[in-house]
Image (tube, helix red, strand yellow):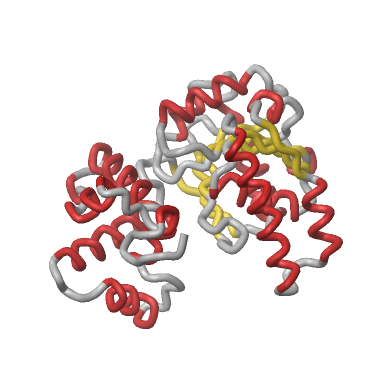
Length: 287
């Protein structure tokens, strides 16, 4: 399917990643229908997109007219089937649980047009398993966006064992249309970015646990010594400690013990210290 046909995008899941994906699509001129079964999530997401676009205007990133146009292209609902009904591309942005993602795709499969491409914003789970749960395994691909979506340039496209060439080509063109730099990787546990990212983050946590240095100095080592825009502990706070833990546990099962989560990470998650979203992780934040 040619990218020119991708005009209507459905985003299933209105959390941090979902509303960020919706925003960049709307700014790029696409019509976007965002669905989340939790009414409160929809309200919060709508407000955050409004605030994010207003901030872009204040910084000169977009014009006030572009902001208004983007907001007009966004529609919100609690019904995923309604969102998928006219979609050319359905992007799932639910929490990292394979069973949940498969359930979502099965739910919207019959509602979406036959030509629609399905994409999962997973950071580590099997795209092939999701693809095979639908009636369109050839028109299925992984689209791993990075947080915060409006600012991060990379889009990791994960080619499932079933993905056809036309789907990969359409995904590449779509990525460029919304201003992202795509890479294409095979569907292996953790893909490319997550395996590298969580390995660095886990080692930083082990160093903190062993008293090698403070969180600030560990992060500064990577920011100033290796020109990382954000240190691995700050990044873990941004992503969410619970998300990082889930990825490490998945990679431990699928790849090997080198991804065994640090005990400090397990303890902090158990204590509810999940990073920015709870106000405390390796750093403290104003809620």
